[in-house]
Image (tube, one colour):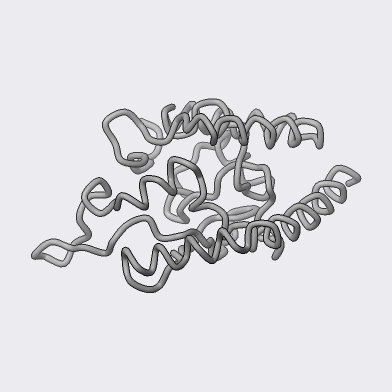
Length: 201
């Protein structure tokens, strides 16, 4: 209980401070995205939150909405723009999620919020990642991010849930800054981002 209260306090203080400090940068990024990809600058998508409850996640757009002759979206690597690649490589596309943190949908640290369609595909153990709020960064993000497989990523998420503490959160936040600066683990091998999760095989 004390851990949850301290974690929420840290989320509110750091989330609010982050929005104030980064507001000029966030405005500049929004203008750049609008200029390169047309409005809107913010990408909104329903993701699974605490206990699998849906919420609206905010990110800067990094891809166009280009489609093929059948009306299907083109592959990620063909829609990802130059600006989008830079935003993803520096994790700046995640900055709007500070608003999700302030609202209480997310925490600064926790398993990354994934698509609602993935929730029924989780194994019993993997579902434990839904026992805490999703985060902007997490244990999996500093231990491979998108360069590791889905099972590895989920195992790291579950480890975090079972060992969560304020000290661990601080460690993850400090490591995230270093990893973002080094631009490590941006995408899976041979992928522009990360291949879809299709459940355990």
